[in-house]
Every structure is written in structure tokens, then in C-alpha cells.
Image (cartoon, rainbow, N blue to C red; front, side, top):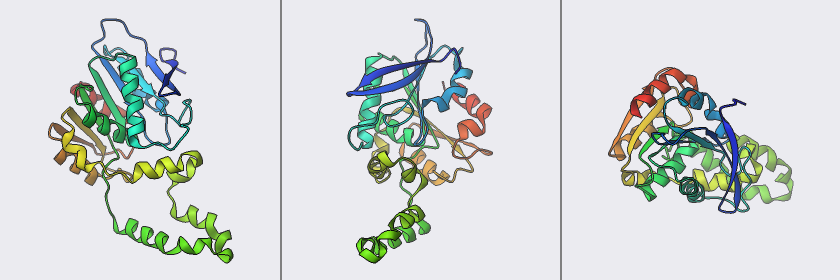
Length: 257
């Protein structure tokens, strides 16, 4: 653990939420809040936070409920539920001039937040963000197969095959967190494309050219629909572009800040 990064806990919506903070003084230019992707936690942003600790901002990253050191939700969450947790965090800590930097699933939450509360965020950075549903031929075939075989899995002779077929057709993210499977289904089934025009915040889109999880096609849809946005592509980076090309990402981020 980097000694300059503090670990703190706070109750948000009756859930004990863990977050990390870099100490700052009252002369801070504002706050930067980092949101992690599915399967990660707030600590994934430590390399970036260390590089920004002298930039004049208060720095925070949270563990979403169900991840890291935060409590598991008592019921399946929608994206809106995660959004309300972040909103309450910003309000409780009275973060001023707040800039949100969000990766992948965290981008879903940030998009919802910016659309619902346009005055809450000063600037928005979406990094290889999820939220746009892209229909591929491969995905369509997989969905059709699942629809076909699912009723058959309840027949006694095929029951024993159910776990193996689920592992074959389900995503790794779905399988990795058994207690969040219902939440995962609710999250991935929500297409945020219709609300993108409601995001009026200055928005920077940072994408890895080799991102196979949230392809560049999604970034271009976001750029087209978010009026005050621009897209920067990191040519040698994948889905975790902020780690794959850390210096390139930091340069772009500092310029935007």
C-alpha cells in the first residue's frame, strides 16, 4: 500500500463502501473521482493516482458495492443503484469541481450520473467505457443457441449438463461473481445509447485501439451522441488503456484537466 493513499470507509445507502483518498489541502483545485470496471476495485487506479498526487486535486477512488472491500448489496443492483451510490458519495464528501474518470463498467455509472445530474460533474473522462450495445453475428448465434437449449436443460436426462453448458456459453464476468450474477445481467442488458445526448458535460473519450471488450465502434457512437466530446485513441493499448499506455493516458488526461 502506498502510504500517501488512505483507505477509508463510509456508509452509503445502508451499504458500507470502501474508498481510497490522497490527502489534500484546502487549496485543492477540485476533486477527481475514479470509477473502476467490473471485476476490479478502486485500487486499480493507484498508478494513476500516484502520478497525479501533486497536480493540485483531491483524488478519490471507490470500491463499488460487491467489489473490493465494500459490502455486497442485499439485492440485485441496476446501474441506477450504483449511480445513486456515487451521487451520495459526492454529496456526503461535498466534492467541488468534481471530475469523474471512469473505466468500462464504471463508465456506465458515470454516463447515467452525468445524464441525471448535469450540474454535479464538471468534466467527464470515459476510458474504454461500456454502455453501448453492439450486436455482432457471433453474439447473435450464441444467444440463439442459448434460447434453443435452455428449455431442454430442465429435462431430467440433461440436468447434469447444465453447469457445463452454462460455463461454455456464459461470459467470464458472469461466472466470476456468483453473488452478483443477477446484477450483471441487469447491467449488461441496459443500452445507454438513448441517454447519451443528455450528457452535456465536457467529455473526453480515451480508447485503446486494440480493445476487444468495448470496441472502437462503441467509442464512435459515444462521440457522435455526446455533443461536447472528443475521442483520443491509444494505438498500442487494449481494454485497460490507462494501464497499457500509462504515460500516454496521463498526458492526455493532464491536458484535459
